[in-house]
Image (cartoon, rainbow, N blue to C red; front, top):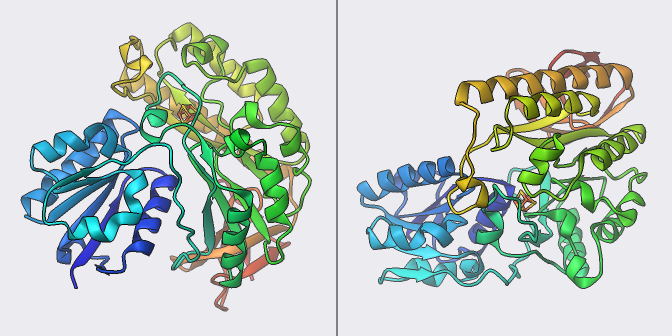
Length: 413
Ligand code: SF4
C-alpha cells in the first residue's frame, strides 16, 4: 500500500480538514514520516504573502525529492493552477473534493479539481487520535469582507451544518470518551444565520448532551454576541473565557479595515463580559495602513481601557488581492514589532492581575506531560503546570490550592 503524509499549514480549520482527509483515506497507508511517503498532501494556507512563501518553499523542496505532491487547502484556489502548470504539484484538490481523496490520489494523470465554495463537508469526524479535546467544525466561510483578509475569497460565504448533525457528532465523540469540545469554523459567530438559527441555539443543544463537560469556542466577532448568545453565558459547561476579535481599538483604523465592530460598543461589550467573570482574548493587527503614529497612540490608550487577558497579536502582512494591499502602510517592521510588544506586555500584566483577583478553584483537563509537569488549561484558558507522582493524563482535576506565577499557575497534586 502506498504511504501518504499530510503537511498542514495554517489555522485550526485546516487542521480539521486534514483530519477529514485522513479519515477518508482507506486505500492508502498514513505515515507520520514524510521521508518514507510516496505521496505528500500539502494542506496549504494563503492568509498572508508570508504564508504563501512557506507553502511554496515546502512544495519546491518536496517536488525536488521526486515525491508526488498534491495541493489542497486555501492556497489551492489562488495558487493551485500556477503550481500545476510549473509541474511542482501533481494535482490540486479543492475543499469540496476532500471526499474524493482516494480516487484522486490514485490518478495517474495530473488534475485540477477545485470543486466549489458553496458545499459543506458531509463527513462527520467521530474520532481524534491522541487528543484530549475534540474539535467540532460547525460552519465554513465568512460573509464579512475585512479589507486585509483573503479568507472569504478562498473559503466562500458562510454556510453552516445542521444542528442535528453537530449534535450527532458530539454524541459519537462523547461515546468515545471525549468530554471537552472546541467549536471551530471560519467565522463561528455566523453559525446558522442563513437558516434562521444561531450559535446560541446550537450551544444550548450541545450543552444539554450528557457527558459534555466543557465547551470552548473559537473566535467570535463583537457584533455576533446577540441575545441568544448572551442567554448561554451563565451555563457552567461554557468555558469562562471568550475570544472576541477586535483587530484594532482605533475607530478610524477599524473603518479603514472595513470592520463591522465599533470602539464604543466594543468597550461596553468587553466590560459586560468581564463583569460576568470572563477572561477575554482578542485578535489585534498592528501596522495596518492608516495606523500612523497619531492613530497608534489613540488606539493604544483605548486598548488600555479594555480588560484583555489573552492576545493573539499580528503584525500586518500584505495579502495580494485584498483592498488593503493597495493601501500604503507607514509603519516599518521594527516599529511594528515594538508596538506589538507593548500590547503583549499590557495583556501579560492584565492576565496576571486577573488571576490574582480571581483566585477560584480551577477545573482542568490534563492534556500533556512535559519536562516533569502535567499541563492543562483551566476554565479561563490559563495554563497550569502540575507536579504529581500519579499519571494524570486525560483526567479532569479540580485544583483548589495553587501558586500564581507570572506566566502560568502551578500546583502539586
Ligand atoms: S471576519 Fe474578517 S478577518 Fe475574519 S475571516 Fe471574515 S473577512 Fe477574514
